[in-house]
Image (cartoon, rainbow over all chains, first blue to last red):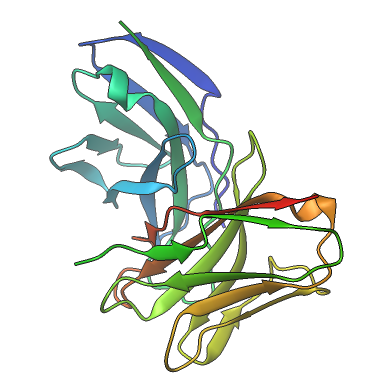
Length: 112
Length: 114
């Protein structure tokens, strides 16, 4: 499993764009990059997943450079309700025997 | 489409008792995962099951813990002879077979051992 490194915490003001970068230097060819969000006392929630270049959905964008050794989750115009822990995971999408490995994530605090 | 359901949401057990946690996956999902989360920690994978099969239990302690996902009914995580160190939030997730990394999590069961 590719190991991931992401900042422990980040602060942002409401209305700003937040970019959280995750390093995964030993990502394998079959690995996908997936981000989850977790609010206190709740289970994680799937945000976005990608393999290369850029993926966008109604919640966030995911930027993946050509070498795929890092990825950046971009949250546009954050609000107080975006305060949560964000996890970056890397693994093979169809590997039936590979569990999800959650690190400690990035704790995002949005300030009014 | 109802999400992943877990019950009970809160469970208090005395040391030595058994804890039984239930998880009903989302409709159409045949893969179930159990995770444990200690306060201020990330989630730790415990076990991955498909109907009537344990696929990967590498994260589950060898003693006192067991899991099943029968043909009918919810998945069960059973902890026998609980100890204080078992106090944690236990999350269940499910996924469709074609997207194993797109897991949908339940609200969790908070186990407190007194």
